[in-house]
Length: 86
Picture (cartoon, one colour):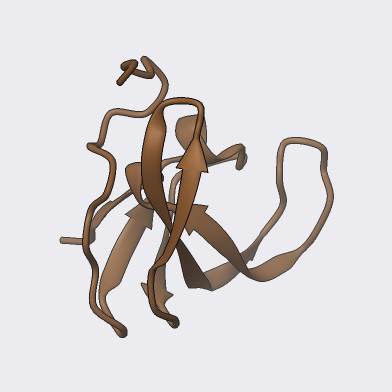
């Protein structure tokens, strides 16, 4: 498995429905880091770095991506772009 220097968190992290998470902007293509809540079950996906999980994350505040598209209220985010919110 390759290491991705833009994603500081490990792959295949497990989060429960309702878990509070921090989305890493540098990993997920957003303008800034932000908080959200897991609102769906993990969905396995094969990436170029190996197996990971998609999680549907509902954002605390609407977000725009790096292409200025949005605002988005929720999106599928890879587990390696998430960490448990403090």
